[in-house]
Amino acid sequence: MLRYLMQRAIAFVPTVLGVTLLVFFAIRAIPGDAITAMLGTEAGMLTANQRAALEEYFGLDKPAYVQYFNWLGNLLQGDLGYSVRHGQPVLDVILARFPVTLELAVLAVLIALAIGLTFGMIAAIFHNSVIDLFGQLFALIGLAAPNFLIGTLIIYVLSVYFGILPNAGNYVDLTEDPVKNFEQIIFPAITLGFAFSASVMRMTRSAMLEVLGQDYIRTARSKGLRERAIISRHALRNALIPIVTLVGVEAGYLLGGTVIVEEIFTLPGIGRLAYNAISQRDYALIQGVTLFIALNFVVINLVVDFVYTLLDPRISYAKHS
Image (cartoon, rainbow, N blue to C red; front, side, top):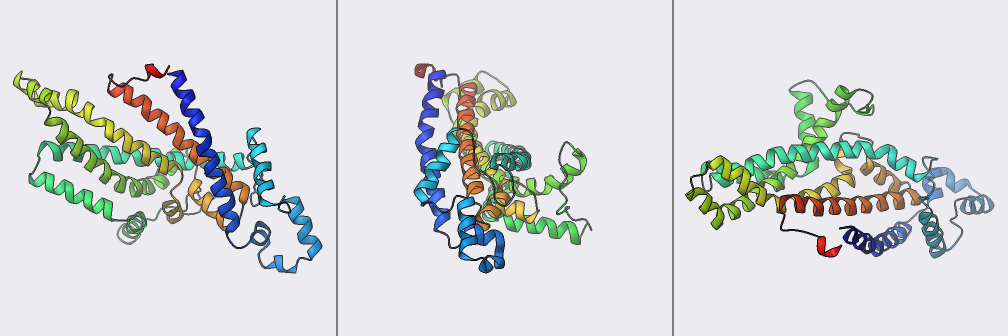
């Protein structure tokens, strides 16, 4: 297992290099620069010497490839750079925003699993019934409705019909006031979890139908086992593997930040951080956030591989160790 993890870590290196190259040069291809974005209209009032001094201070006077290798060298020493807009090390800025996105992602996944697994199992058990049709209709709506529409509808319904509105601009941390934090995070989580639950429902239904048609399920029924035991102990466990894969991929996207939902509900998460960094040409912050998101995907994939072995003992990475 250790050898397998090392192989995955080594394979991660070229992926990270590719991501850093793409982001590093793509952001510099966008018109404008960090100095103009930082000073706004006052940037046009700078003299040539003042602009040259600022470019030298921020390291923008060197060719792009030199800037890249300098940043890469600092990265190997654990230094992600310094955010021009925030006036702080990039790593500190990311770690300050990540708990918001992490909490939102975890709650959204829990909501999606609670709804999707339940509806998916019921739809599979009552295959080709009215319940199954309702479940498929729910999944279709969930997949077709974009997040910004769901979020806007939630805010509209809450404000017009219930006279309440999610707090904006005054986010309260979970450790400071759990109740108020939950009130602020639950509606964005429902927005994300609704669409995700549709995918989970479809996957659960499909996987359960396939498993319920297997020979060992028919054998279990012929032995007189209760249907509830067959569903919970045999069918669901084997049907979870593709669902775990789906959850792993979606969790990676959620931990990468959900820009639209965080913007609608004004949550200070990774998504809004990345969006603002791009608009403000904060090169170091953009590169750091992108690298952090890529690392999240790798960690989640490793966790998914481990969960596979728990669900199905036939899956083993012992041969890699």
